[in-house]
Image 1 (cartoon, rainbow, N blue to C red):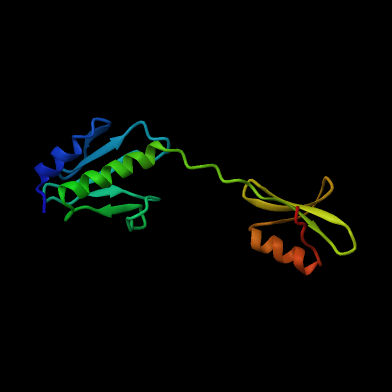
Image 2 (cartoon, rainbow, N blue to C red):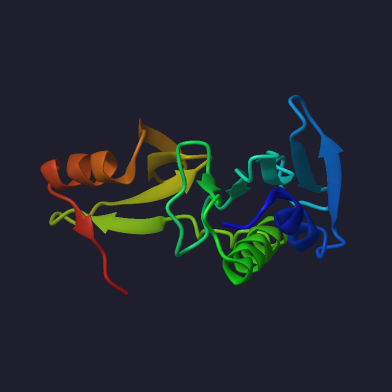
Length: 153
């Protein structure tokens, strides 16, 4: 296991991180250029060598419910790698998800549009809102029950 001092030297190889002292002689390291509200990359580096790194959404790590992974037993290379990944994760905007827009057709010929809008799935007949749902599966189930199917292009 790396010592507190060894971990501190490795963390401070990242000039983009800003050290902030917290209680019980622990240190946090922030990435202040984060594109998200979250700025803490290394949390609670403790004199006993324990520390956490924020890895929420980063493949290859199993974070706790706060998005952190314990790096107490990481090697120097593993520590550098996880910090690099954490900084890159906070510096990269998540790709925008394409919202759903589908046309559904009834066997009798009528058509409706299913649109994802602000996290809701709304069914429109022309410009009139017919029904709104909290998720896609619920909206699709409703439309199928009504006899509609997705119109293929």
